[in-house]
Image (cartoon, rainbow, N blue to C red; front, side, top):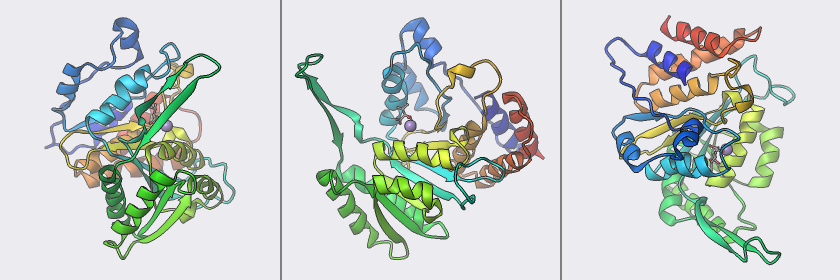
Amino acid sequence: MAQGLKVLTAVLPQDVKLETKPYDLGAKRWHATGETLTDAELEQLKQHDAILLGAIGDPGVPSGVLERGLLLKLRFAFDHYVNLRPSKLFPNTETPLAGRPDIDFVVVREGTEGPYVGNGGSIRTGTPAEVANEVSVNTAYGVERVVRDAYERAQARPRKKLTLVHKNNVLVHAGHLWKNTFDRVGREYPEVTTDYLHVDAATIFLVNDPARFDVIVTDNLFGDIITDLAAAVSGGIGLAASGNINPSGEYPSMFEPVHGSAPDIAGTGKADPTATVLSVALLLRHLGMEAEAVRVEDAVAADLAGRAAARTTDEIGDALAVRVAG
Ligand code: IPM
Ligand code: MN
């Protein structure tokens, strides 16, 4: 977070006054107080133009506490229905793929529905006869708005290609709604080439032919899974940035690295801040500062191209701040 703010401060023009307010919402706070995100804090957060969220969590917090109590609470409360996750293979970064394919696509992951809603329950819990249901919620309203957003993004890109990823051969009810909506909305975007892939097949293409993708639209859970795979093939999770966007602007959008908090290296100065810095670029773009966003992305590309010896978190942040300012 410190490196992200360092680069943000360095890239802003003189006449833009940056006001930041830190919120201490992570695992440390939960250990100390048992609280995650209070309603009062949610109200305060609403007043900001944008939110930069650091990687959170440690192994001492039971699974689900911070996920539901903080991260998902923010995504749902602020109606972040577009979870934007770009993948680009920068020069001099490692990919497990042969031949360094030209990877440059963006996943538009739905952010407020699917199984993440928390609908479901279990009966006879903890017995051999337990039945557990996890219900995926898909509404016509929710699907159409994210599909439309994805078409808009595809239309604005040079290749103008949009792929729907789902599993409509098995999840027939939700699959029908997604495919129908995708085809219907698509008639309004005749310039956009469309394509459909089942999610399992999509994982094969992400490894064998990732260059085929331009924009992918998919539901919350499929989007979670394929964006980790997308990160792994395009430089690693340490470079993966994301935006939780509320396109209407009614609520602040939130930008965060896709990765977690890497508690195994906490405090060692080894964590790569690049995903947070790239999330700052998405934040700048969202606020209409395209030139500054590009400067941050170019600085990361140049830094990665010249990266040789291992550097500390601070050194990488300093180098990026110098590049965006210069
Ligand atoms: C992500 C994370 C979250 C998700 C978890 C921490 C709730 O994996 O942002 O991809 O599943 O969305
Ligand atoms: Mn994830």
